Every structure is written in C-alpha cells, then in structure tokens.
Length: 113
Image (cartoon, rainbow, N blue to C red):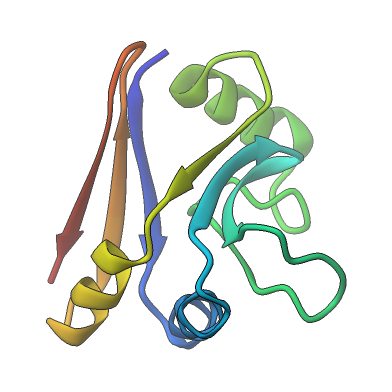
C-alpha cells in the first residue's frame, strides 16, 4: 500500500470545505465504495462528497477504481479525520489540486498550483 490520491480544488471541493467550516467538523478521507473526502458526521443528500481522481465508482469501471484504491489505500475500508484548517488555507492560497500521499504508516497532505 502506497501512493498518491489527487483531488481537484474545484467548486464542489470548495463547497465541501465551506460546509465543514460552517458545521465546525473535520473532513474525513474515506475508502469504501471508492475513495473520497466528506464532512464528518453529515449524511444524506446535503452532505458534500468529493472523489479522488479515478476513484469514483459512478464513472469509473469497478476493476479500475477498486484495483487503484487497493494499491494506494490497502484492502481495508477506513475513515480518517483531517482538520479543515489545511483545506481552507489551500483554497485561500489559490491551490488547484490537493494531494494525499499514503504509505503503510503515514499520511501527508500537499496543496499544489
């Protein structure tokens, strides 16, 4: 297990971060049916969810997203809390992409132009 997840900082991403800030909740990196970020504790249609590039089961073939998710994130499903501060600063700084780098023992975040 190791690799990098990439999330475009687009309108949907900004709306998700705004929702988290307003609710005073962290975001969660989730691996289950795809790999995505969401606001912790929110459910239903109003919860903003942003999938990592190539890992959205709605528009990527099962074998493609599943194999990629397994290679980068490992075999188990998980949810990992991430404070919203990093995301809000990345947006304010004009970042275009968020990268989540994973190894067997670490997770790091990087915002790029």
